[in-house]
Amino acid sequence: MSLQNLSHIARDARSWPFEQARLLLERILRLRLDDAERDLAATLLAQDRAAEAVAALPALQRPVVFQCGYGASGLPHMGTFGEAARPTMVRTAFRALTGDAIPTRLIVFSDDMDGFRKIPENLPNRAMLEEDRDKPVTSVRDPFGEHESFGAHNNARLRAFLDGFGFDYDFMSSTETYRSGQFDEVLLKVLHRFDAIQAVMLPTLGEERRATYSPFLPISPTTGRVLQAPTLERYPDRGTIVFADEDGQHVEVPVTGGQVKLQWRPDWAARWVALGVDYEMSGKDLVDSVRVSNKLARVLGGEPPEAFHYELFMDENNQKISKSKGNGLTMEEWLRYGAPESLAYYMYQSPKSAKRLYFDVIPKATDEYLQQLDAFNRARADSPVPAIDNPAWHVHQGTPPTSGSPVSFSLLLNLVSAADASTKDILWGFIARYIPGADAASQPLLDRLADFAINYYEDFVKPNKRFRAPDDRERAAMEDLIQRLRGLPGDCQNAELIQEAVYEAGKVAGFEPLRHWFTALYEVLLGQSQGPRFGSFAAIFGLERTISLIERALAGELDAPVSQA
Image: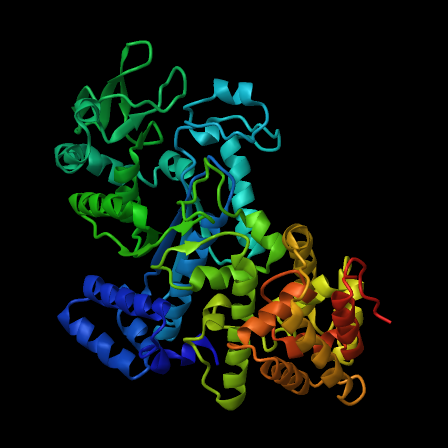
């Protein structure tokens, strides 16, 4: 079902992107329409006649603008993905809510006119970069020698990054918007309303900062650096300010045409006003900054966007992730061990709750995503109405694939572990016997998961494997399990029958609760304390190989990989 036909169910959808979409729609109707127009729009929307509402009300024909920002002094990272992914989810929900009749756009805005203050540790040609310190990032020479500036280099990486994930967006450069004159009108408003801007800003600053603060950051005509210089004189009638250049000389420059840049909070507010931004997300750490920028936007005659504050990610020690510290998980690291879909799912989950962002969350996020995709497709088979509150619908922007993976990621990990598989060919040898006819072409997601499982096993599981010998009760239970498995028909691939045999062996041995029995199996057989459903593992690994694995564990011989033969 297309987005045009979902408004009747989107009105009652409970997932957070739809909650945000309804708030955004209320804002659009409130700010763009008068009372009579709002009544008409509400009536037509309630009757699923959004296209008629848009045709009758020109104010609704102007795009609803979503925005996210990018700090161009560094490369795209995990936060960059979330900055684009979450608003895209709300945008998709809004399109469904309005029958895809009201146009929308996502602006990805690069703050590439910011002064280059800190030089990241991992960059080459640091001496050259030191010479360009404090210049706009688009005036800093590219240390990689590939683009006309470091800002252009990072912008190119950003766009390739977003394109690789299939985001639909409009890229905008701070440098280009300032220099092209697109911000001239709002910059002149800042100049004319300078005192009102200061009245908002100064109470938020320390005493020393207040003494020299100006919303304008002039760019030195002699050095090209972005200066933290006080505004000495203002001439609103001719659109200029006077400041002291680095050599002490007083210089008069226009505030338009890229001669100055705004401080970041006034810049944020001016951007909202100039671009007509309707919706923007930001981290919980920016709540106060949003509050200040909201006031500034109103001083400039605009209305701040609908806001959403998400919680920040934490590292494995529950410390806030910091780019400068390098703690937590990078984008490249996630994509070595997990699919982009699993990352989008992780971004979708409870955005107002703090979550750890470390390696051990990847398997769980991957399997939860697979479970949600399976649930979506089961519901799709039973009903023509899509399950739009399912996370998979949001992860895939309303068009989830019709199939997922017949094997969970955790099961693949344990298969790799038990077989000590170093290549996908080994894994596919097991999988193809369990799922006749399955191969990389027919199961592309499973094929990708196999790569991720091997990488994860080699880097995290294998170095930390700690096999232990069974105690007397565990040994007796495992010997009993061998006999029960031998009593199953042939090379049984019935996961339920195998699981029942495992349960019975644990019960007879007196394990209470039974999870202690399964923990013992994983620790003794796989060298780890957790694993997938044992019956499913044995079914895909093979009954005889599972029996052999238990026998080798009881004999203390788990040093060599299990043969596929």
